[in-house]
Amino acid sequence: MSQLSAAVFSLHYIGLNLKKGVTAEHFETFAREQGVGIPAYPGWHWTLLKGLRGERKDQYLMLHEAPSAQQYAQYIDRNGDQTAAARDFWQLRPQAAALIAEWKTFSTFAERPTIFSCYSLVAQNSDSSLPEGPNYQASRGQTAVARVVGIHNLALRSGVAPETFEDFISGNIHRVEDYPGWKFHMLKGQGGSRLEQYAVMLEIESLDSLNAFHPELDVSTEKALTFVREHQESERMYDEWRELASFSGAPQLYTDYLSIAGNSG
Image (tube, helix red, strand yellow):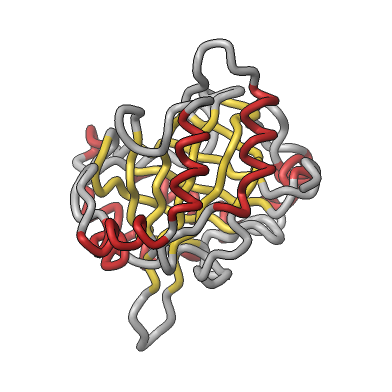
């Protein structure tokens, strides 16, 4: 996979404006009813996530996905600041700028000085059964699609070079068998607070799907254990992975988030 053509993901911590009495309910109602009108850059998607469990339970995160490194750099520079093209984008959309200003009365927005990390895609499971599309989708009269997004931080073992780990993942990604409706991504920090660090991002079709396999932190159901027994090649790959780096889940820090809003365009 070309580094320039691979997708880029950026994560921004979002904090409520508690000094003005904003509650989670206030913020989430605004995000779902009005905030979804904030557009994404061409080809991009944004999703507002809320921590379900793990390190950042009940905390918010804004996930941006750009289709390629070139399209990310067109709007955001390596320091996380807007480019001239981004400033032009918002200047031509005064209604969107007004929505962002209103958003900021409820919480921080996905911009500096908010803590953020920008990741490039090292590899992903191309055989996943998860349909393409945004993590949050809402249409009038229909039940909203609200996927779960897991962010699991990793660390290399002592003496393991980053290139060794990346070559292993890229060369063995075909051995990964995701649970039905799940999709695996290996990410590498390219900017922000997790520079040169790795993370697994799991996209899961629904909260029900997460709970069917792992209803609590580091708890596996019989359905999950059966899947593992039936997919031993994946387990062998994961054992080899553990020789190079920590694995997804404990003891590393991680959070599973529920999608609660996203751009409607």
